[in-house]
Image (cartoon, rainbow, N blue to C red; front, side, top):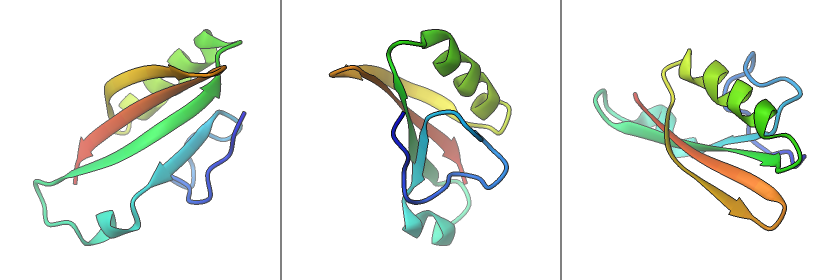
Length: 80
């Protein structure tokens, strides 16, 4: 699994995939979307689904899931 440099949420996703968030999202006005992604090996689609469900509990919505080489990348959004 790849790891991102900037955590999405400190308590979220421990041990699962990579999380990243645009640093400018902390200054977005209410009603604007934040965008993020999860990145995980395609050897475990079940783990990706589990992580997406965990992020959904925090208000994140899947925009699209793509396969890049041997890695699933799920693009997410949520209202700020």
